[in-house]
Amino acid sequence: MGFVISSKKMKWILSLALLLFVFDLRSQDANVDGKIMLTVILRHDQTKTLDEIDDHLSKTGFRKQFPPEGVEILSYNIVMGVGHIITLRLPPDKLREVNLAFEHGVWGAFRTEFYPTYDYLKVFNELKQKENQGSQGAENAPAEREKKQVESQKPTPERSVRQKRPSKKSDQ
Image (cartoon, rainbow, N blue to C red; front, side, top):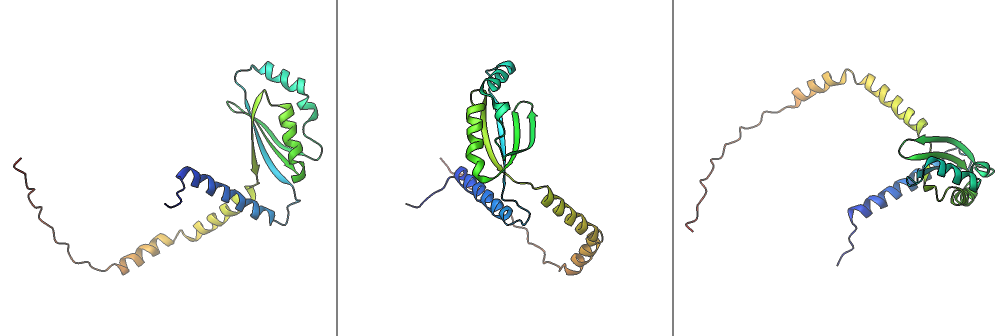
């Protein structure tokens, strides 16, 4: 019997492979300072009121102690219906410390999710610029393509139309 991978598992494997590929590309960037980016989503525990969540954060000292030394907060947003979304830049050896800060500070008020992150804006803008330059040169291309298409068309023999055969009915 052969080895079979479900489509759900295959999507997960391909997503992981893509993520590793992206990190490999990012690690080759000459401007990288050796730090990684991490996006953290703190999903509200909707069984608690906002006051209860704030009390929990005060009691644990999360706001006073976060971020750990050497960790930079790049963005901190509240997304309605989701919770807090925080993007950090940190040296890889600070990852455990960041994880512990969230475990000790927010667990009980939020459900945490962590996502390795990279800045795509520069790449996006470069791709957009290339496409815009390509589309300017392509303004005359449709007329040229149409001309070539007309020249390359060859007459095709007429198709013969088949007659439908009457279906046989059984005498049952």
